Image (cartoon, rainbow, N blue to C red; front, side, top):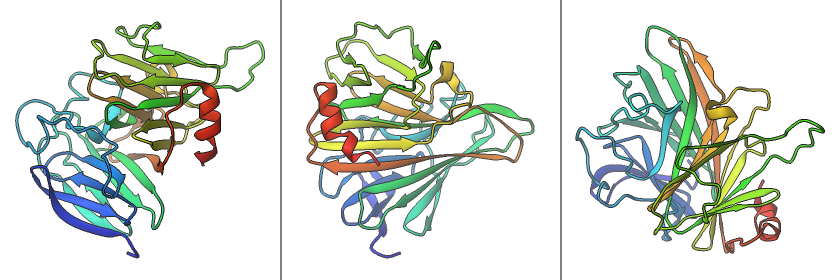
Length: 300
């Protein structure tokens, strides 16, 4: 497996976590609950992901826990289908340069979740393949929904659609009932939207949009986390054409990419791929010129 190390370890009360590292970056996945990738960052440095302190290390119970980190859902959001409990053990296996995390079939939805993780050798780069398999008896309409819960204090950067469509509109945005257009955490730029996390925020904010560029970024502690994915221009997406969504509250900001809707037949599987990059020494942008100067040159 080259310079990639894969080891079982305890992490903050969870005794059966799996750490994957290439010496530059490391990630830690839980197997006592999940699947969750609870940590990702430069080796020996801060966790780029949020950890919900009162839930870390716990298992079992009759309530859904966010825990923090990165998780896999299926859209559209629903109080029953989205919040199926994932508080118990999952299976995992090694693969070349990574691991595969497999959750037992959800008893109510009959959907099976799997996340394949591949760490690049010698580069701060991770590829994730999210899979949903319909183990039930009839077709289900859904989209793959990959959600990354970022640590507090950072600033998110989201590109807007800039395609010239002439006399026709070129973008659409979705706002949830609690989202306010005058929210001071949001910077509405010409080409980019920025969202500043605020630990003192009293209300949440959520935005969805058609992200044709297929990336979003989060700057925190001088580190730049980039999430890349594929946007399909002619596909139908959840939540009024949202291939990307973000949610923020007082303890975290969530970066969410989505696949197009599919009618998933019994026995069939859909995949959705993300690629993560991590850069050091990146200053937090204040205006769009900062994004163009310091972030865009790093986007691959």
